[in-house]
Length: 151
Picture (cartoon, rainbow, N blue to C red):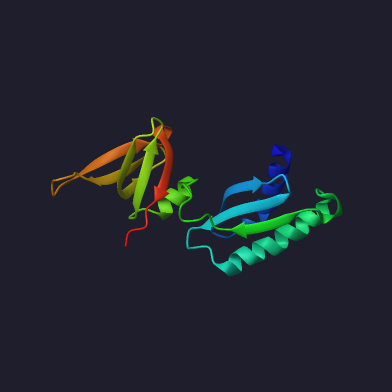
């Protein structure tokens, strides 16, 4: 299955050249349902998704990867409850509140203030005080990070 994922990725990357769109994840179900999750530095519109979907579908179909056209393709952005999957997604979400789970499953909620190649910086409210503290978390210590929707 990973060979198929690599082929899908190889077909997709040239379609994204010259755009600010990037691959977040690719999943293939046993029913040959391909799910391509994309994001964009400026937001992924439905039009952008549709353009990629049409071109990619045609490339997959022409390649003969799936005999008799036995596949389906979904191109979308990840849902709001999906963990951030790339450095670019972290950069895009600077200023937003995130929930970070570390490798020991401890959780930390704060405002994402900075992102570097090695770490993220959160501004965390100290409970029962009107203060905040800055917390640096190396990417190597992060299990997942999910943007929190604040109303």
